Length: 536
Image (cartoon, rainbow, N blue to C red):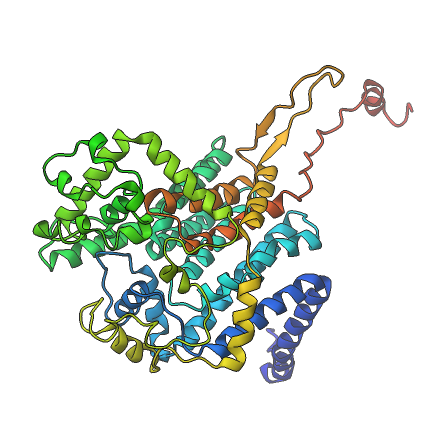
């Protein structure tokens, strides 16, 4: 006979178990906080600083041009000729709340989550609690990192997505195909958010391929992360193609049409028309000003007549014809002056490690990266209420429509502490150099000579398949690539710092112990095992 279960009798027990789950979760969190007390205090300090920013600057801060494109595309979803709008899709998700304060709070949480992921990954690889916590401090306490999270800008989301992808890849030595696919999708969407990071589309799949090329499982993981990386980018390119066709720009399979514009700015720092000898339309865009009279590329490109007035006859710099002419000119300039190009990139990379911070590419740009005690009309662009970055609304009307609050409000009692703090506490250039060198120390190891008494060099061994390789190469690529295609900018350093910290922290990880081969039994023991018990 089947036994009937009394459901009503189990109901109180089930209710008690459900009520006990939150208590167990709280108990577990308290236990983790006690076990990782140092990091808990650092995380709390980072959270407090971000709270000051939220209270001191209700709503959000802006970066002229970029922020208005992102907000406009969030209200009226569409690609843009000058920049990708993957970040606008994130803003679109939060649009029903009509709160820019909510946007900044979420972005501050992204920053805290990145620090948690760094700490968890380092502890997973056996790094001490002390050094794991130290590795998170530039992310938690850097005043410019906090200010960037409070802007309507793409860096915080981009860094958050890439860090999740890296955590998925590095957590286990053997990556399953579905984990690789998820990591790839995150990387691909990160590139939709910030095209300056497109180099990671090659780095992440290449790392998995190098690490696992000897096994079928490794090949499958590398293929799947490649598919995942390309899928969001291909989807965005398809969206751009359909959208641009509506405006008569047929055959455009791109993410933007501004590549040539920014590349022209890069080569403007060294381009010599007498050496390049351009002809036809390229001669029109060749900069003729003396090199000493040219401002840095990030400033010069916005004022040079060659890429504004002189190119308007073919549709302007951000158009199919303009983009083609500028790109062709850049290619010829680099071919004619390769050493000048390399020297310029190396020099600008060196600015990352300088001290003190300078007004580069111009003081106006750098001022957007500072907290201020007031944001008056002189700080706002003059065309804030008249220019349409995304057709259908001005920057000011889009700001009101999205956030239901006018920009520029400051609560000075909370703003003053964070203003003073940011001026003093950030990742100084020399410190940033030390972090990168420490990360390199985890990638390179010394191979001891066979005969130590003889004077022989200690050759360096490049751990291509080692865990620190991916975060360190990612950091270097994210540092150099934007400079190589545009110019140095302090904002471009912010996504670099977390990955450099991961690599530096892994330098303190204990070496992985290889499993010992099984011990072979001795001939005597083998003989004894064959003797019957009765005989023994």
